[in-house]
Length: 410
Ligand SMILES: Nc1ncnc2c1ncn2[C@@H]1O[C@H](COP(=O)(O)OP(=O)(O)OP(=O)(O)O)[C@@H](O)[C@H]1O
Ligand SMILES: [Mg+2]
Image 1 (cartoon, rainbow, N blue to C red):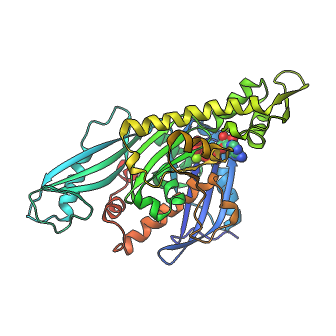
Image 2: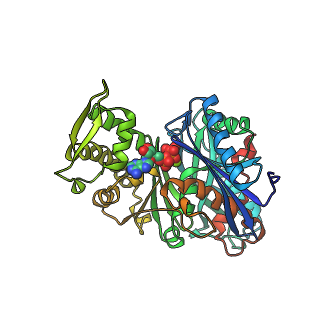
Image 3: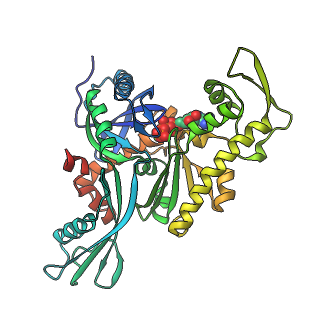
């Protein structure tokens, strides 16, 4: 018989373009957890990270939730849900206020954050996260914990993430119609960063590129917070479609050969290898060279990584990425993508799988689960921040103590 959902349970739902993944964890103490349930179902109602068919999405979420309930023996009633898609935008915003009583108090910080939030958000967009980067007290720059400091003027520099109001509302409504209350909505790259970046990488600075099915989410992390984000509508599905079109084969066969033979780096080519694939019309088979297949995938991978390079150059954020770039998401399983990224970006690149900090089944040790696992870590940290936060950087405490936009909005 299923256990009743308790507040010691944390549930994460990654509503991806290709799969819905539900993870159930049991909290042990305040800062540890054990993952006791996994549910996975093909995602049918999304395109490029955004819900385009409510009925199909609800059905897929229900399937994944049911599986996770069976494995964990719990009834799932609420969850932390990730969000991504090309509707996500970000910008930096400052807010400055006078320090009312000569020394900085929590109220001054709230006022400065409110001032940073007061900027013209594009029509149809809604603020998702306000991530404080650092404070300036009078002329003292880059202060991380200004409480108690003397001065007359407090300024906060924030990174603000916005998303389309309707896309978010659709996602929330799908979860709720599937019987799951949304506890918080979290930007997926923020979650993935919690899963795959080491504490040193988070502190010294690293980029994370989550190459999913519908979108590739790029984020730059430094000093424990996100500095920059960008979502690109180029990911695994495009690689498969390129192969299907370029080789005139079915989507199904293109997906199969992508996983079994494709590579994004020309040095992976096996000149003697011929691959048999289906023809899009008729039942006969055709032969293609490995060279041809890799060339098609290489062109798309090159394009994707060039966009990342342009973004890094445009925003001059290379210095924030001292530890290099970590690739994750199912698309990072493409052979040679790390080598190509290293060549194009001229920095160290590695593949990120969830860090084994907590008790978890070994099957989760794949970049495919980075977002779902990261959502759990995010939720766990958020909970422990309320009880014991002395060791946590101040900017993180501010993020955690701020009411999430979801509760503001609904
Ligand atoms: N071995 C592999 N080689 C190449 N690509 C792979 C491999 N395994 C999975 N993929 C690709 O990974 C993609 C799915 O990745 P992932 O599960 O991270 O996406 P998602 O979370 O569903 O989508 P999104 O994050 O874009 O909404 C698919 O396009 C799939 O083809
Ligand atoms: Mg994903």
